[in-house]
Length: 74
Image 1 (cartoon, rainbow, N blue to C red):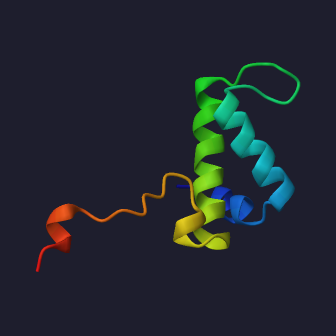
Image 2: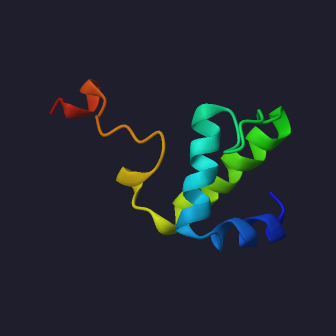
């Protein structure tokens, strides 16, 4: 991943992060136009990068709080 992109995504405001995440969830921008495949991929990279720096693992998209049953056996 491009270092400049990572630096940019880590400087996102919580408001902009929220807008990007909502756009990904809905598949469209706030004005109603659809995200292209490239826009979707870039938004996803930005959201993941932002979350890696600013959120705990439990707060990140895709977090599964369950452990594998085989790990629970002694």
